[in-house]
Image 1: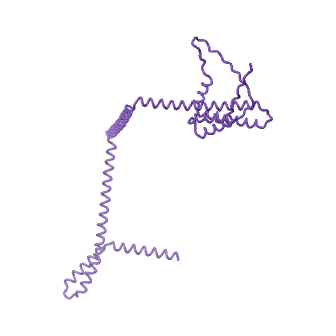
Image 2 (image 1 turned 90 degrees about the vertical axis):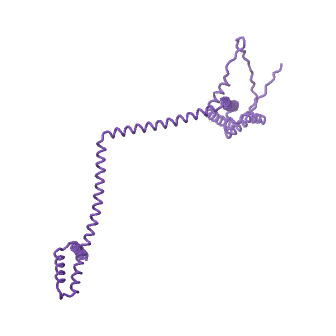
Amino acid sequence: MVATSIRAKKLLHSAAAAQEARIKTINKDEISKKIGEIKYLSTQKNVPRLSLRKEIVHLEQKLQHVFELEQKLLKNENTESKKVASLKKQIDSLKKRLNTAEDKELRDKVTKLYHILTELLAKSELKKDVQLSQALLKELHNVDPKQAAAESKEQNSEANLKVRRVAMILHRIKSVKHELELKAELMSSDSGGLEKIKAQIKELEIKIADLSVKYPDAVEELKVQENPVDTTNVGGAVSSDVNHTMMMGSPIETTAESGQQMSALEQNLQGAISQPEEIQIEDQIISELPLPPPPRIRKK
């Protein structure tokens, strides 16, 4: 079945091709023969008109194929003429490209144009920079030097105050740590509160390290306060040392009075560090800082 269908398709294709070729071919002998028959019949007197008309119709059919072929030829000529015109344009453009490629002065012209464009761009950028500098100079002239100096002085004073406050807090934390260390030395190793005091000392050391990293200027300020420069009197002699006698009192205890004193101190130190850190340090100091022992009066 498949082979027969393929053969049938081939036969149909060949028949269509033969028919198209027969239509395209023009048999000049047949046309000239028909024209001769029509001429002969037209000269005869006893020829019926119907036969003459039939011959004319057959001739028209033959000539119709000729007309169709003529139209096809005209269309082909138009398309070919368009193709020829496009090819001519392409040839002209290629010739122009070849001429420009062979032109040695063209490269020099391109380089000159490139340099001109770069100079123009540089001038435009320079003009913008000049305008910007002029605007900045105007703004600087409009600024009041006294006002600027006052603002800078105020900023410096605020920064110095902050550094001093942090230094004071560091000093108080270190004093609390020192008191806890003394308390730990006085306590026996068997007591249960020793481990708690050691843990509190470690926490204070961590807080001191954090504040030292965050505020190195405060650490320097604290060093200056702890190690002041020795002063001399007018005559040049060194001032005499004052001896103080420290009396160790009873074991350290935290009282409500010490908490009130530290809360008043921390209120004066507000703004030095962030609020959460300040609250945490304040709670730690209030809970751990003791009052110093009262001085003992010697009997005369």
